[in-house]
Image 1: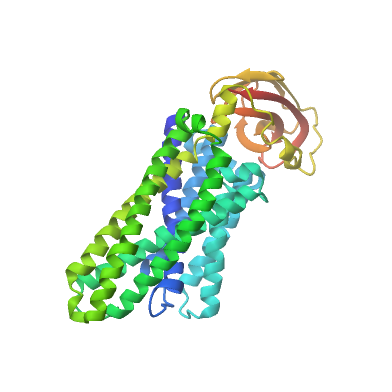
Image 2: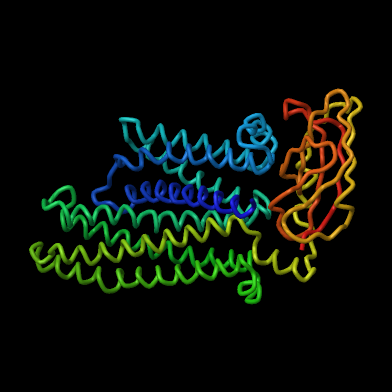
Length: 424
């Protein structure tokens, strides 16, 4: 069951990342690369916001099913609780709003500076929502880790997303035997602009990626001996290959094209463009492999956490500093409801990512079920009066709180209990 959730979550998040990277890459390409500058969004760019809305809805349903543990046909009543009581739900709502803005901006007939500026701002903030729902947010929404992750995503989107649209320009030049829509000189200019943009992005990616590796891995042992580190190793190998292909384009193929352009348009044959198109296509393939690795990494606890927990050297309870802030502003009177956690016991050390719970639950007049929070994040909903199982709990120190909730899934009663435990 856990493996199936990891697979589906990875698949959904992989598609989501591809969509966001293409969306921001298209905006960047139209603004900074294409010569002359293109104000009109392509058909793909107009479609992407709506596809991402559908992918986001699928992600919401998938996470709600995982949190509630209920059959698919019964999870719809749990959606409001996930939306309004979890960090993911709040980020999801912000993301949905930004996608609506991008959708309207892409289909409006007037594509002026204001429309493009709004689209660029919304696309930039859209990538921020990805950082706020990933590992970087474990350090807090307003942390250096989130800022670095956001800058990393911006650079990746401008480079790898722009590669796709560069490939489309080159394909038109190869297949369509006419001087328009892009003349050879204009296309050379676009390729040079993209090469300059890619160089800036590579520097930013290397700087932010180095920080992320230190923050999430910490050392060679964690890199080599944890599942997170091993997948990260595959990602790094793909990144190195991508950098090598990018260097080939920048320092070998592009100078040759420039020399041919100086000699005359007739010397720029289809084979000249085809060579560049082939290497760009390989770069896109490597980029997709990197995104697949990232989608898997998002489902695993960082290597630093895995390694520290394995040797019981973690020195800071994860999420404890933010835990009290996650409590609701007001709890309704218990009206006879009560909850007492029997297991895990205070300070208990557990193995594996499934946490079996036993508790004594009295519903009283208003209680209907339990909300289970781990480190302030809603992780499950349970109606069984005695037991339940939490899944996908990463290694480290955690705080579990059970709260009695009313039938509407929104009202929580002043009937709670909490324990601290550790997962190895």
